Amino acid sequence: MSVTELFLLLPTAIVVLIIAWNFIRKKRRTLNLPPGNMGWPLIGETIGYLKPYSATSTGKFMEQHIARFGKIYKSNLFGEPTIVSADEGLNRFILQNEGRLFECSYPRSIGGILGKWSMLVLVGDMHRDMRMISLNFMSNPRLRTHLLPEVERHTLLVLRSWKENSTFSAQDEAKKFTFNLMAKHIMSMDPGKPETEQLKREYITFMKGVVSAPLNFPGTAYRKALQSRTTILKVIERKMEERIRKMNDDECQRMEDDLLGWVLKNSNLSTEQILDLILSLLFAGHETSSVAIALAIYFLQGCPKAVQQLREEHDKISRAKEQAGEFGLNWDDYRRMEFTQCVINETLRLGNVVRFVHRKALKDVRYKGYDIPSGWKVLPVFAAVHLDPSIYDQPHHFNPWRWQTTHDRGSAPTSSSSSIMTSNNNFMPFGGGPRLCAGSELAKLQMAVFIHHLVLNFHWELAEPDNALAFPFVDFPKGLPIKVHHHKLGQEQQHSSNS
Ligand code: HEM
Image (cartoon, rainbow, N blue to C red; front, side, top):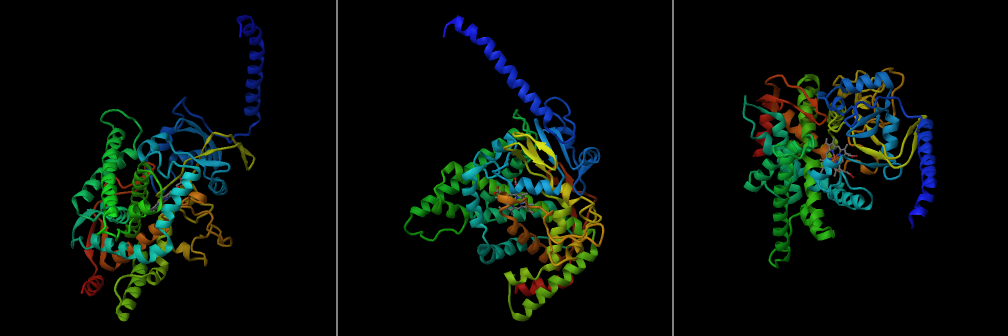
């Protein structure tokens, strides 16, 4: 193209640009965005949003924004224009339209640390394939036959180390329990072995980075976590190579019944994909349920009536087993833990282990008269719904009995007793839609079995005041220090199950 031709085309290009610009501006003007505040350039309102607050509240930021703008508002968070939703209907709509109108979209730093093949960041077919592997591995039959005895064994391993009158961090003990269980279940790593302990130590550094600001400079938690990621992947890779050698070894036909063995035998994932899958399952499976167990210990110490009712329920189960001459919990025992399920629901509702998830709009979406523009981030905040006084009566109060009021254990009464809800649509501790937590049943099983042995064997109290905070990941700043005493009845039972 000659210079003269270019010169002649220039006015046309300018006209096209002006038309396009006007079109975008007009579209913006005609869009009915929710009300809100876009905050400072670049950082927007991120600092206010991430400011720590009590985990049993929605935090000042959210409260003030909902009071000012309503349950759906716009903001600028994590460097992107964002729609925040505390609206139960919109939250459901977002999760159920995964892949069609919305898509999972975690900050890039999460992908950097969990890996590009991590299930949290994958979308589309690859996510579906990885999800199938996880679901298959935590299927109901496996839970009943394989995982339940393992969960009980690891619970007892931790609880039997608790000495009379001793004081320790309940949060660390819960982490020990869930980490050991996942390491065993995923890679057949035994608790107490040097490689398991090394992995556990590395994992602590790793976790600090996952939840820190993604600043990749020397000395930052994020940089250290990236280094830990490399070490952890080396451990996993070593286990993988060992296993492949064993698989090729004639004399060793019987393989360990763990996720690693299953993936190697039944999938054609690459080494890099297997490493990220295992790393992210260790992460997803141990951090969340340990926090949930710590929260249950915390809420229960403030509610003796619930502990008493739990004791009665578990005592009944335990005595029936004794009479039948059975040892070890089975699936029928688990199904009899009805009040325990109420305690679990209430713990997850009030504690909100996962408070919100990250999504983005794939198309322009209209909801309740508001426009959500394509490409915008969308944050469905489950915690805001779980603590909404128009849905849950006295939402900040630990009340497991609220789950007993209807046949559907997931439902809860509203503030007016005449309008009892009949569905559990608003209760989403495990997310929903095609990305519903793959380990939700395992998590509830872990909590129930832990509670069973806890209430039968121990009384406990806070050794010093501590409080669950949302950073927004939930954590007890002092590690939830508790002092324990053996419960006499439990001691007898512990004895009989030992003998
Ligand atoms: C109380 C404990 C737990 C809570 C509150 C919890 C919560 C959640 C939530 C909210 C999600 C959805 C994330 C999103 O939509 O972006 C999720 C996903 C996931 N969780 Fe859990 N989780 C728990 C325990 C577990 C356990 C024990 C495992 C077992 C390994 C697990 C494995 C997963 C996996 C693999 C995903 C990704 C699912 C997918 O993308 O398809 N979780 N979890």
